[in-house]
Image (cartoon, rainbow, N blue to C red):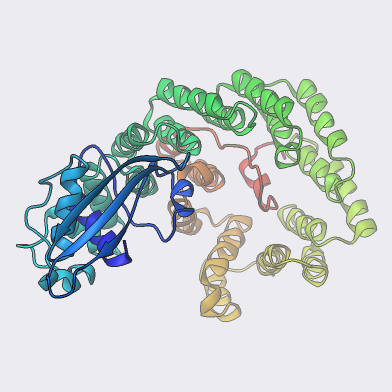
Length: 469
């Protein structure tokens, strides 16, 4: 029917409570955007009549069979959109009518309030840049478009980022009502419900996810993470083991390592070691499995043995991640040769991630100095474009130097920049910072949830949130 008519039809249906309409570039795009029905058509016009006729066909988007056909006519795109809304049983949801005279301004986002309804105005206007205003707008839109699961999810994600857990949970519920068959939405919602304190809803969402994708290990893995965060370690272990049994290749068997962490957190180090050995055996061909063994020992009150084994492995394998980890541990132990290991980590880096980790280690293992001098070093040694990397490197340097008070604002900023489900490390480090300063009240407030075990990403600094060493 053409992009202009498609957009106007979508706008005219913007606030319909029983559907969410949006234009797509092609019929093949509709199923990928989880559309249930696809409206297509072609336009005809008799010369000199001033009338356009839309010959429309409504089809099932997945099965691609015709549900019904109809014809609407009018002098402009707005009139055609009115006709379509009537045919689809969703008329009258606009405060005003779109017609050809204001079509261009409407599509450019500057339509007159007198001619556009509130829903269409929100749909056309750019989202605010301010995070709080953006979240409020998305929340308002998700209420106006109850059939739009994507906007509801965007609202929930923005609210979660702001740590506004109760309204985020409500947005997740709206999204699930709009699209109960969207499997990964149940996963996102489960974490949102858990952070809001509604654990039964979280587990229910994961059960729905599991039913939609019975062969996927992720629902069990997510359940393990949520239960771990709630310090229900025995249940978390069982969920992680279920994920591994379902798919041993899932993230290279990470659920098995996380099951070992859950057992260790419950106080059973011996059984945790046995589970971790299963993980090591399953990853025997991975080049960094020896590094993972050393990290396990380091955080299991075997730091001296871990250092010794890593010294040997780094010299033998000459891999960047091993040298970087060795540099950080040496610095934490006050050894003078930490910087030399960091330099080897940088020289042997083969990926961008390895290089970034090595750069942070190089910075943080420089000679100790005052917090002000550390800040001056960061400003001098990192270009403006590398500001995020510089902030993390400065944070690590301050923590290694036990400048906890100066580190707290930086740690909190890193935590707040991430969604809670992936901010566990920074949350736990913030808890430790308050503990180191003797502020038990703030430490308790920050430790409401246990840090979720890492699945992927650089683990060089994870030892900081353990008390084992």
